[in-house]
Length: 104
Image 1 (cartoon, one colour):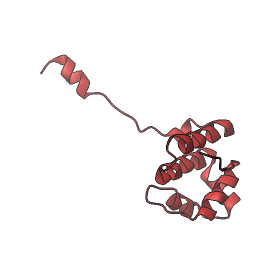
Image 2: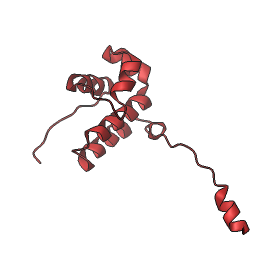
Image 3: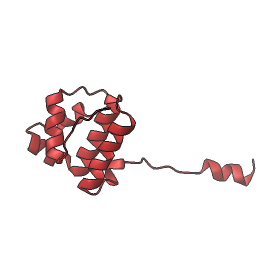
């Protein structure tokens, strides 16, 4: 086996967490807007994005501001989560973002 192949096998990866990159309210709102603009029919993707923003904002803070438990929030915003629209609106309000409609 050549050295090039061995070096390639020693590459280490780290888990990427987008929440660590969303440092301001403007970045968080832009991230959610991008999800809505680029994948408007991907409800589970948008919920994951909402979860990313909630983690960036601080899940304990979101839980406090929504009146929901942290565990409940994590479950609602995971891949298999299915929160009510009322819960999504509470989370959006706690994050300081507004969802809006426009003519397609």
